[in-house]
Amino acid sequence: MATTIEPRAVAADLLGHRQYKLLIGNQFRAAESGATFAVSNPATGELLSDVPDAGARETQAAVDAAVQALPAWSGTPAPQRAALLRKLARLMLERQERLATIMTLEQGKPLTESRGEIAYAASFLTWFAGEAERIYGSTVPSAVPNKRILVLRQPVGVVALITPWNFPAAMLTRKLAPALAAGCTAICKPAEQTPLTALELAELVIEAGIPPGVVNIVTCADPVPFSDTIFADDRVRKVSFTGSTDVGKLLIRSSATTVKRLSLELGGNAPFIVFDDADLEAAVSGAIASKFRNTGQTCVCANRIFVQRGIYDQFSQAFTSKVSEMLVGNGLDPQSAIGPLIDDQAVQKVRLHIADALDHGAQLLTGGEPADGSERTNFWKPTVLVNATTNMLVAREETFGPVAPLIAFESEDEVIRQANDTPFGLAAYFFTQNVSRVWRVAEALEYGIIGANDALPSTAQAPFGGFKQSGLGREGGAVGIDEYLEVKFVSLEL
Image 1 (tube, rainbow, N blue to C red):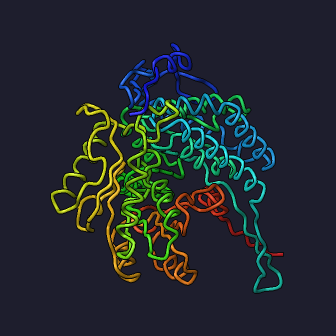
Image 2: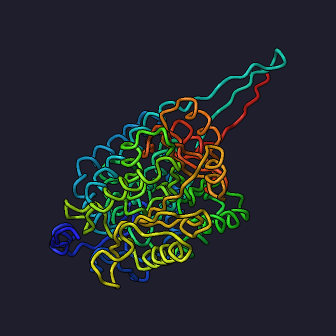
Image 3: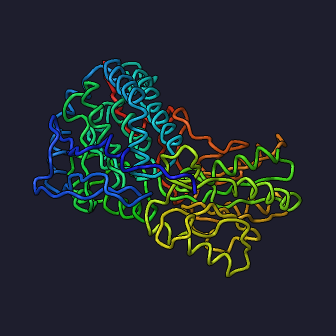
């Protein structure tokens, strides 16, 4: 474990006795019932704050506020919307240290990663500010001389944005930035484990001068009343959700009643392939960066590490040597490379996957146990398993924890079959120095995001999303704003 620090003092200094509130319309307000729920530090279990526990009434009020704000916001010239997005990005970067520290307190990731996430989150605002200024229509040649055909792109309308706990800033702005750029108004629901970052951003939204009702933020311990209200209201035209595939399927069914548009970024089972001609040092560093970022709690992190037989032992030794040096501890400690898992349920899944792998013949090279020796802890040592196989739980399911199974393979065709043998298709990675292989493998892998000699490909400028049961639609990139636009065809007869 990394050296201890005093998180309670840090939390008291930043949060004090602050009373967080919902943002609905032009008001910060409590839940009508006065109910709250607790937000705790996963590293210590200590209470950070109580936040409003909203229900159907508050959600309905947020929808009403977004509906009321829509005409003026959608009619605001694109350069003015873009200027407000850029101002919000500047405010985020000015408050980067505060936002990052609060994120580490409520989510657990190392502070260096939290700082990087705030910068990444702000980049979506600046990118989509530019896209707001380039929402072009078109004219189409008519088949007859006395008609003109116009194609217009207009905002979808009111949207609901549901974000996960693992990236509480970036997942919010990745949805909110294109929505606002397109001229939509939004109701945002952050995850109940990590709502503080979103509520901090709510204050910056007001400070940036974004008009009342354009952005509404609703926190709740039970997401069902929120979802039921959103899906029952015809005025909410679109829902964007990042989370598990099982919940995504429920939302697809719920959307049928009012035929809402959906963007879904769901589960993954990312393969990380190391061919025998790879730059070994780069592959080892890339596998560590992909696997252990945010303690392995990312939907795009390497879940199955395939290594070609000729370099399997060499890679295993180099990889394990570096992993065993990674320090586990509170994310506020600058020495910590691995923070806590989010909760006990996450810990139990890690335990189950390791036990299943060992029962089926895998060997443990490092880790495999709680970091502080206690059974009641969210800290887990980064773990490397060798002689893993594709029939183990750790290869069939998304572990969402710091466990790296190394699976040997013989040929390119074999590993592509194994990599694609999953219902998921979000992200995949491979390392090779063969240019022809780069093209072959990138085209053969059934995934929406490919990192070729790149373990961290995500960027605001590129489309993010998956194949198969990993979701619908794309976020980020030039196509990201299309998710929040309707296409209208106008035929004018002269």
